[in-house]
Image (tube, rainbow, N blue to C red; front, side, top):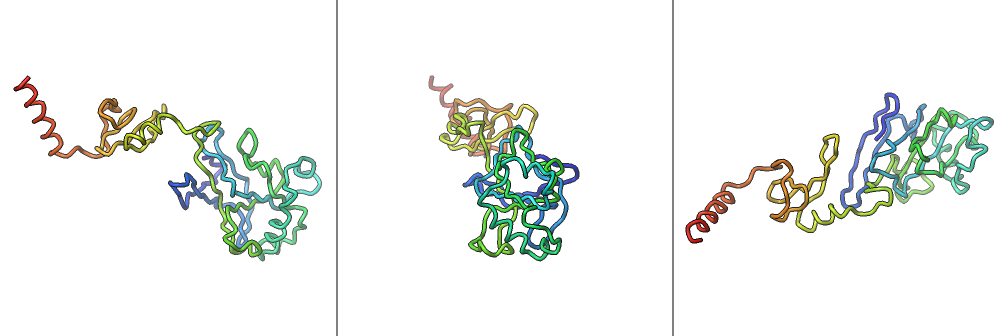
Length: 229
């Protein structure tokens, strides 16, 4: 994920079975707090995309010079989100007209994967990933940004991952610069292909040590083969 200026985005919930991660931006405005922000972005090569539930609302945008006034960036059906956000005490005390709010429609953030509020001439933004069954009560909304893991440009499930999982392993990637594929196997070994015995090891690395009983059994098997063959 991208860190813009001194902003750090914190992950506060991760759902592995849905491949969704929920993150929060300390500079983001909510119904209970409004503050200036420089925006939000993802690294262009980050393996993430925005979940369909994510809604971005730009706040305090210039009504005369902001690009959102001339380009089709705002959702025509996002007026209710803006009006409800502006009804919050923290935002309402700024006395901003509703026309300064825009529900940002290109949720992919364009080719740069960046929402630059300085270029858009907006003072802040709010993001939510659910209404929590309280569509008319912005104080009860789920504020934050939902992103999902994206395998590749077409989001096709990698064959290496499928092969690893079929053999009982859990796929992953090394933290090294080459980000090589790994298959984490139940026996504690980390392999480069799958967890079948034909798979190669990843430099002999292990996530947990083998049990002594397993090693003894393998040694005994080789002994019997050498004696009787």
